[in-house]
Length: 258
Ligand SMILES: NC(=O)c1ccc[n+]([C@@H]2O[C@H](COP(=O)([O-])OP(=O)(O)OC[C@H]3O[C@@H](n4cnc5c(N)ncnc54)[C@H](OP(=O)(O)O)[C@@H]3O)[C@@H](O)[C@H]2O)c1
Image 1: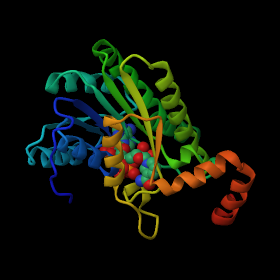
Image 2: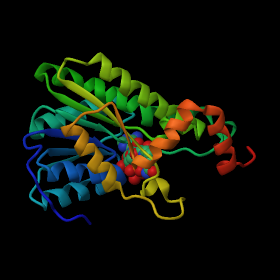
Image 3: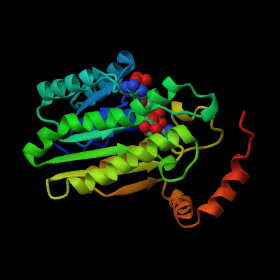
Image 4: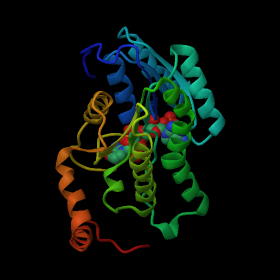
């Protein structure tokens, strides 16, 4: 567990982090709190969420847990109200909740497609929509979406579709909100050691590297950052030479579609 290196860089800021019951979201909630933000942790698993919130308050930082399913618009409205009641108007939103999908499209049921879009894309759009009026009123706000390298490089069709969508939402919302005082940034991680990558062998970066990148984006908003940086090369190859990227993908991932 990371030691407390508390600063007050984000003192007085109120942050919602979705998907905060594990992995990148839990690490991000903790990192934001360590920098002085008052943090609202949201996800479905209430026990895990409460344990992470208690661990943060035990460090002398402010945190509450609000069990929330990001696919339910009523629960998202309630989340924003609960954050406001606990700490005041929300000025940081981290849209991090997400799920992975690795089955071929042909073996994916229609409702599974809908579920993936609701968790990875629609949930982030709805929660952003719910916090925006308050942020625009204050003329201050920071929205950060957790995309994926799979939103830069076409990999698993279902997962990539949701992450390309989230990337499009984030980049164009950033333009729409220019000059309003509300910033929008996207962080696109490659493989990180979390529950989501249980199946991946070998060493992977810990969630804290993404949490640190998110804290940095709160202080210095940018269009998009890829984490770890070395993956910028594959994103560049995909954009500039997609046929070459096809070959590289075939070489690394070849398997017959079942
Ligand atoms: N790990 C990687 O290699 C990697 C790489 C690129 C991008 N990402 C992205 O990073 C984000 C976090 O993933 P992770 O790696 O930290 O995996 P994780 O440990 O499995 O975390 C996923 C989080 O999303 C939450 N979640 C899932 N469905 C939800 C729903 N309907 N409502 C509310 N919360 C929901 C989960 O909480 P509950 O189950 O308690 O609801 C959990 O807290 C995801 O958006 C993922 O796509 C991860």
